[in-house]
Image (cartoon, rainbow, N blue to C red; front, side, top):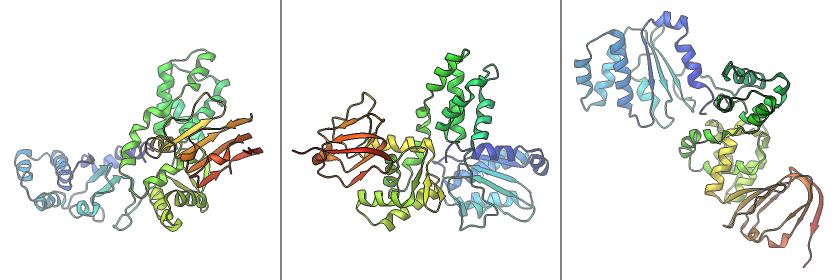
Length: 376
């Protein structure tokens, strides 16, 4: 996924002394844009190969302007023949055919090596090795945060527990940890109270736009399943069967169909299989699912201990987060609800007759102490 460190890792390989020595200056790095065609990628590789070999660019670039794609590919094949090159394609789109590119890059024995970062594992091609990126564990997350914070900002030792707790919002995603460090640096805290205030003010919504492009490219059938992740508690495991069951009820399709859609989410790293019975969702992506669910499927979150009010426009899906206090839940918009989830615990008082379209009432994560049904 975005921000998990693919490019950072490959850059370290690319610049490693042993790699530089093996390939000398015969290294090519192409940042692949989603707007690139196969021909444009081949041309970018050729341009850098020509520079590495110190060949005359004019005649070669002129030949590349011919409309024949095959000509460009053959030109690359001839340039690489008998040579050892390291070619990096950073951000290769899942919708583009990698096989076409590989057709013109002779991957032989001790010769050229192709290294690419992407969001999809290519299982149907002759790929020598695939490395699946993982999020950082808590100790490594903490190390990255301290490394990224400017040296002049010394993190108070006695606030370390608070810092580690706030770091849970990042859920091990390097991009989010770096964003947290940037926000702390911007506040420039020095006193204990300033550090506490800075930690409490951390807001990772600023990086959500970086993930929206991935959402827009998501398979149309899998998008609703991703939106349904908003119904569940953040930073917790989601039972596989429950997610599939909820999505099937809301969409009125079979659970076997939903299972295949959720499988696609896993392949594209939107959810991770924690074990055979549950999924895990990266915190940032859970935030994105809530944001998009609010925009697209009439979703909202209400908190019993806040001043928020139900939306004036019809809501179809709602999550109620309760404190331990008694909560009197009542709204005139309940008749539009399809699903209602309760998180937290306490005493709940509601007018259950107002739910006309409700298909899902869930309080599995709700410590219900008292249930009151009003008679009319």
